[in-house]
Length: 410
Image (cartoon, rainbow, N blue to C red; front, side):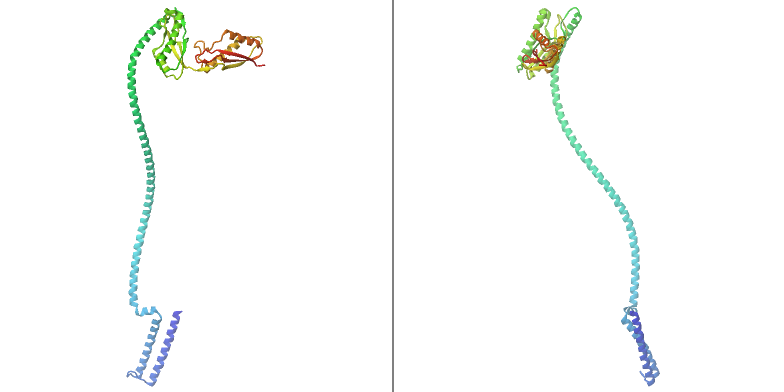
């Protein structure tokens, strides 16, 4: 819209100037005016030229006033051209720089991609390194624990070494004792050889001589009281042995008894050591170790048992209900069964049985008669038979009984 207005103004201005110039030229021609001493005709031409100049000058003036671009085109073309060349040169440099930048960018992108791959590889290596570090840490902890165990084992080895040194010293002392005992064992061995020869002679003559004592037969027994006096212990043990010798002499005579009771020295010494360490009274029993024929020494074994009161007076032992037959048969079997059960119960509670018979007590004829009479009075009935201890009874026995009857029908 601005350009149209400018053209309209230029046309109107040119028309007005042309009109004024024409009128002015006509007046100069008609009046034959002269300017600068020129002829009228020449003056008219001059006015026409000046009019054309004014039209052009006014046109460019208006354009220059109205438009900065026109001013620039009229007066700053060289400058504009120079700036345009500079801009073109700068544009070319910028294009070249852009190409370089694009090349650099491409190179940078490639380096970035490579760096990214290197970073990923580095991260993977870092993860692996971290895993390796964790594994190394675990191994370090395990190694520390192992070192602790080794240190503990080393301490134990030191203690064991000290114990071994002490044990070695003890073994040296024991070895000296064993060497001292070796001579004694040699002497005992000679004595055993002599005894073996005697036994061999006894075996050869056994068919010609009767057996006086059977293996397992009880020779003598007694109780050794608890004491801290070794001499008293030995004296009490020797008294029991002397009792056994006395019984042998009574049975065989002095000539037939030969050397009397014979006990292995080692067994005798072990018995003495146990008696010294005993916490209470001890029962001693001398048991025949082998069948004895007349003229041979009586080989014996020492049995030792802690002594105590097994049954107190009137203490209950055993009871059982029996059905007595009407005809009175099997009375002996009932009595035998009852006494056998009493015997088993007493042995289970601690009373020592006779090695040969296996019995622990004694019962007299009057008690047997009383039992038979009670069974006869209760024929065809159920009878409860009870056994009680007649008096305080220790491990050595014998067990004496009080027997009671009760009719279960009543």
